[in-house]
Image 1 (cartoon, rainbow, N blue to C red):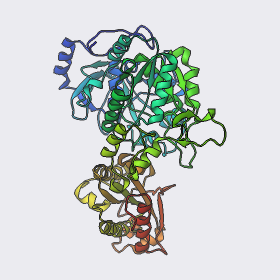
Image 2 (image 1 turned 135 degrees about the vertical axis):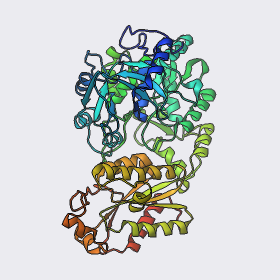
Image 3 (image 1 turned 90 degrees about the horizontal axis):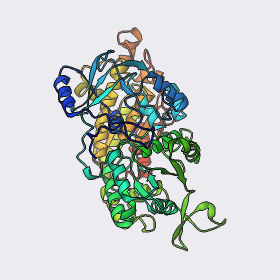
Image 4 (image 1 turned 30 degrees about the vertical axis):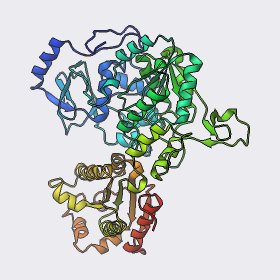
Length: 574
């Protein structure tokens, strides 16, 4: 079945899918007229959302949400017509970036400016982001990756009828990138009444394998191994490596007559229970009637105070609560542990107190990789672990970013320069990105308004993220006064490889150290928007390293940073 089918929706979930692909003649007409239209380049998140809108993955949703849909989804988990849908899907933009008006046609493009669709703008509105954070994600804590990302989203949203020219084109794993109608046809050919979908954003260890096989056997069904390969949690193993591991597992360790591997271009929200229900609706559109829902499904972990964002079983309960309406039942397992004496896995709740067991988790897998230790075969299939270890070096060979923040004159550059020398001494190659230097060469022309400051900081973070991605060490010394922008930088680099260092220096000390007289100029009003005088500085609440610079020298503080890097495994122990 191809993308050109003219299917119509006959039920909210599980029926035929909304198909937004225009006819061949209309596509040619749209391409011809699009050169005259205002263009909006979709973000990575909106690109994933658009693909699932275009191919029916979000049926019955036919476009980015309007205000009525948005408000009701945020408050009640339902579209304006009453259909269950727990996650808001909005097309966000800033007026500073693009001029969009009502009743105009808008060309939507990918990041290479390839034309994807034309949207008739029928509504423009502002989302209540704080309410969305509280209602949908249950928090305004920037330790939640989606909350931190939302701080940088465009303030306005556009909605209207979509005429799709083509979904985004992928050059990787093309045989596995199956649209919902393709997946449903292949599942139908396997001739089993029950289809059990498995959502994952991580490599599969043996406990995952055991859960999926038990679920399929208990229902005499087919397994839809359906990993998310859009945006996942920052710091996750890249999808190229993960998919190669899934292919090896599906080929070598699963029943070929009862397993279908397909990729899902979903941009996850890490929204816990609501996300689990969303995953169930999407998988119903792909043909599944069961979803394996684990403990802490789609959870980002713990908040700034070390407490879990969501209750461990809340996702399982919510999916099952709406099973009659969605047609998707939750398949739930308690935590599986390994019994070394019996060389098998079992649910913890079934074991007697005192039974010798070993827990299995993704964090332990990451620990094996970071420590450059071989992964035991009881933990993960050797062919899978070989793929992971080849693609991901130990922590001492990974890139990292140390981000120094504080007032002007706090000692950021001086401390960073000493740390740079120590890193070179240890054998690491290092790049130093100083905020003032970057302004001279990369951000020339930017002003010192909030928008200008944020643009400069984001440019530093982008360069840092590329260095880290390629295994380099980078030190960034920038005032970076706003906490939400620093959180965005952490996400851009990857929170596991981002170390925030706060140089806590009182304003009066910074002024006394000022040989250039810039604080005095700010006091006189000669310099506007000066951090600490006429513009705020928002100190980190929970920095990785908190340095006091009045009674502690830059040399001593640099030693604290180096010791931290050693403890984290980024530097070898002396």
